[in-house]
Length: 118
Image 1 (cartoon, rainbow, N blue to C red):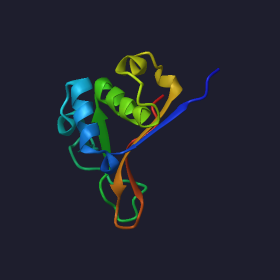
Image 2 (image 1 turned 30 degrees about the horizontal axis):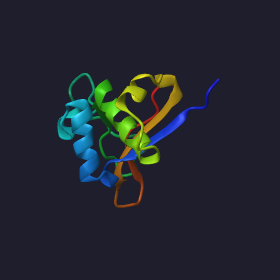
Image 3 (image 1 turned 90 degrees about the vertical axis):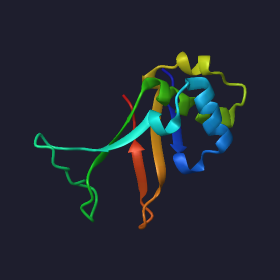
């Protein structure tokens, strides 16, 4: 049994070169590939985030499989520049602990966009 590979990407730490490489290997534009939306109830009202003391709305991030693969690829290339997109294609979701974050809020709390896939 293999250990899960921790893949953690902070969107604010991506370089322009990495963004360009993401677009090259996925064919996707980053701003269209990863979308954060408010979670709404059946009447269309925004739901509050139960973990936010300020009562801000709950959000979820949607991304395609190809976008997730692109993020995993960028993360793995930081440790191994020889990794290929084909290597990522061969990985199992069960082998990855995936987290995508974007900066921190004013209290220093990470704004997690997408967490562990299973």
